[in-house]
Image (cartoon, rainbow over the protein chains, first blue to last red):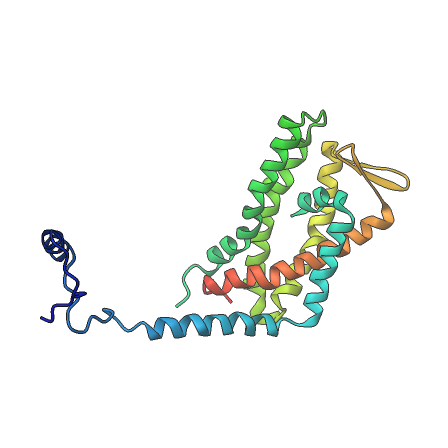
Length: 87
Length: 148
């Protein structure tokens, strides 16, 4: 195994270095991830696209209705308990 | 194979009003117990807490049963529900003393006075809200449970 170091040796640090080497397991020659991370990344990227695509497919009529309901509840908050009664 | 589709349709329909129940209970606790409102609003709670969720479930079961023949979109089917809930809720609220029908306006909970013209607007808003909720939320739950 290739031993790495800074090359700077101070007196009295050898014991500390040995302790560190025992505590931290060696990384190995080619320490890669245990599984391929790219598919998961691709799923996340596609997920963002899916949300944007789904929002894009909502018809303008539904957006208008949602805006109308929101405006009504903000303009007439007294009607909220009545609407909750029927929901 | 599609086992128990009506049971799943009922559960999908009940889903949304069940989410509203804690909100209503919080409103009740705050208004009646914290703010100590003298009006007994618990009289009117039987409708939103018990009847509305069951009606939503039954309405979704009706859609599951009738959809193969009518091909009615779920949003439109849900938008018809206020036509049933409106008169039923009004009748019950009037008998329980929660709603008073006046000459030119109605009074809810002895506090909220709404003119009859505004009642029509409220009804239209309720229909729009039901259309959106049924189309997107109940539709999503239906698809998740394998009904739609």
